[in-house]
Length: 316
Image (cartoon, rainbow, N blue to C red):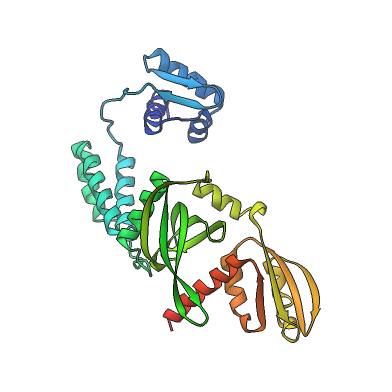
């Protein structure tokens, strides 16, 4: 990319966010901070009204806008590619919003790019099946509204109960993000009931009641949350009581799931302690011998196991 194209791209990036950090620009274009500062100085000299604050970042003076920007060939193809994915995996409402946005994008394309996009629409197809548990349209919309407005919501959620099977509980939560994984949509939220973060599957949310009550906590981003989950800081302590007669069958396996200690309790019981990175993987392993063990802590693992068993029961 030549310098003129980079300066144009930086200016567009500055319009895309309220504040842009110099490091973000450096990372995007793989250039040094010194080069970033030189480019920003060039934009200022060209008449671009920049505001820079030490330790915060750069922004454009309110109201400054460029004329509509033309997209290049590669960008036009990328938009069409994204549209095919959104059609398959987004709920109906958000899919329609995306299509509406795409019409506006296509409206500023040159004739050649318009023909290209139309042709590519027939050459890109997502053949994977629909999500195995499609998200309720109203649920997703309400969750996104809560996240964007930072307003607390109450949900009615189906959890697994050993006696009552599916039991509907009420939870007060502060959602921090929504994600798609293994064919289903879920959210990460701070739950006032357990006073910690947990995930909820959208297809098990029966009702959402919005409120005007603002979030009481300052939350990390969804990416930050997953970074921490994958790091040592978010290792989860798990304690199980295991039947001594059965324990020797999984002696080797336990080392793959963060085993850190063992204590004899008597009464034919061993207490095993783990520091696990992933509750999902641990849950799948635990279920293979759940009739010979009991979860001592944490409560979150009990909830995850019950939810997982509920899902299995629906497929039998």
